Length: 306
Image (tube, rainbow, N blue to C red):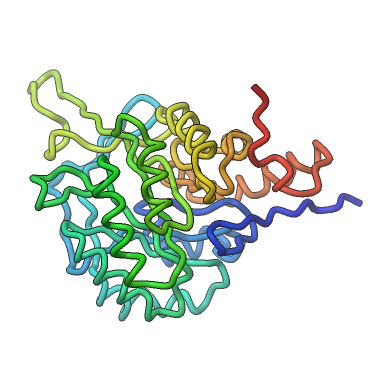
């Protein structure tokens, strides 16, 4: 009889049954996957990014397939916090998996107001703070590309809520470890990385960009090596848990991120290819540990040998 290994992990005080989470923007508000995935078998669910007011996002076309991935310029379309509370939140009472809200804003005050509202919601376990958004007061420069502004956002959010904070880091920076340390010092309980890499695609017949927004975020297997490298760098630079994101499509990918130092992962673009991929990954991790006679997931985290 095979003894099932212990897949539990901990990210900033939140205990997960396994390390497989869903990435924001790729899993809707979870109810869309109810008939495809056993939501209670997931480690964590991160819902579509929320803003104070509803947002229609960018004009189409907003998605373009690329070699080994996709470009998206959805523009963080969402229902807004109050509609989320009224229409989406009740669903989470049906499941046991920890649910995180992803939040974003154009001003630091937006983040603080969102965090304060979410702090009142018992159904929400934690908050993922998206700092890859344009700061309108800085002429559109993303909050997360400068240590000082990244820290300012997290300090404001930290004051507004007692819920665990996960900060999603942008790869479009010179040194991601500096940003990671800045948000750690500002009160983050964990960091998730990486967000998408800025890219573009051109229609050679019309000589026009394929995205109406011209540029978009590259995700999928193409960015996995970059994400893995950055996770390894950040895991050695901070004391808080690191969540790996970027190009994860199978259990082997997850194992790589764990060995590099991640305590958990988020699965994103792969959900579009195979809506049941998260279930396949959980089963694959378990099979790997059994095959290698490893009793606990924690025994492989950060074990890269150099």
